[in-house]
Image 1: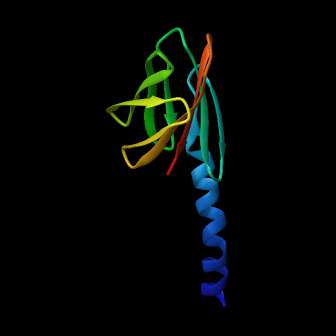
Image 2: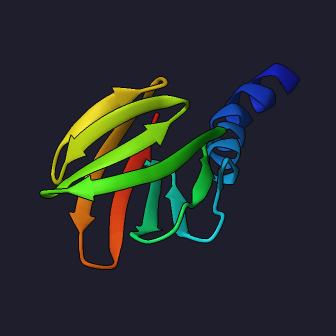
Image 3: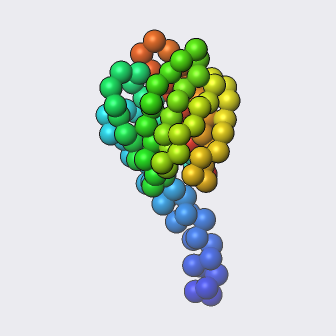
Length: 105
């Protein structure tokens, strides 16, 4: 009986840990069960802790964002995705003032 209760609570506990794993440092971070959306300002050097790894916007050129995620430098075009540090990283939007990035496990 106790084992069944513990096993049924595991998905809820995992979801809470996943959501709690997102944190921001000067940028907007919105986390849910399907990952985190980070809105980086285009100016400045902001490092954000997302799901236990650091993420940073390095720069933007011609609609393509250069990011550093979990120590790996990656280049992702708007609408594209790539893998870095065991996470899927996608760029949802690039404007004159911000870059919206999606990070999921």
